[in-house]
Length: 318
Ligand code: PMP
Image 1 (cartoon, helix red, strand yellow):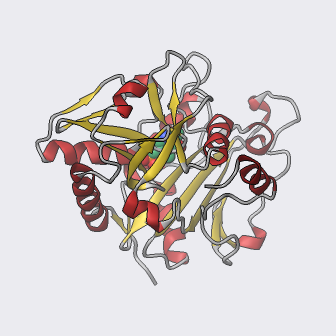
Image 2: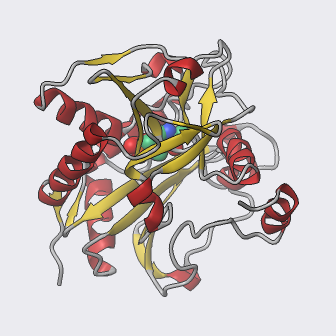
Image 3: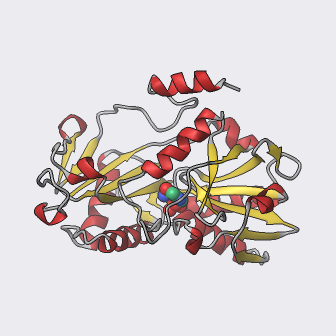
């Protein structure tokens, strides 16, 4: 377990305590505003409001076995989020779908991770988004490893983050915006505590989600997850896992939960595009269940892998 000061200095050195992400530079081809360009030429202006204010929206999408998993659902969420912040994506759904698949093919990726970003575009130094005439769109197709392999086998350790999810009257947690500072502050707390992830509560003290994943618990065979209204993102992986739970005929409910419910659960697992489905075995230093990934969690992991590897938008490679 790293000490707090070493965790802070690791952070200060710009390194996390475990490997997160993919290689920094891979000579990728990036789709940027209508063209595939080499990574070294894929540049966004310093006057882009995506950079100046975190004004924009994004998606993280996985590629499994030569298919883009739930691409249509991801694109619908992107267009909805853009609409919610009055951002016009300067291309049709079909054009963006085609650009995404093309970027995967151009980089010859059978398995990987796509980052699709829409920024408000270049504007003045003031806040006014109406002074940004055209949004920029870019697509990166690469790879990602969120947690060490050992954690996928033995489970994650979670803490309760002091940083809370914003009240939807302030900023809807439904908007997957380029402003992830709330989540980043919570992630720093996790790293400083020597954990990989943490539970974020809403302003009423109910569990919302994790810093980049949705959370589920299992108690006496019943699976529960917080409702979207508790401040959770309407995760695409969450939706897929709920479908699997229902196919398996397991009792299931979306209902408010507190830290007590996680402390006393038999099993806990997280879902997210980057994280996939992963067990959590410790919460605030207390073992969850017997401290090992649970039976239902393991079954869901197996079924999710099967689904992800056999469905999705096919990519045509050259
Ligand atoms: N919550 C947050 C805050 C996230 O950033 C993510 C990742 N997009 C998720 C949940 C999981 O959503 P999804 O399954 O769509 O990746």
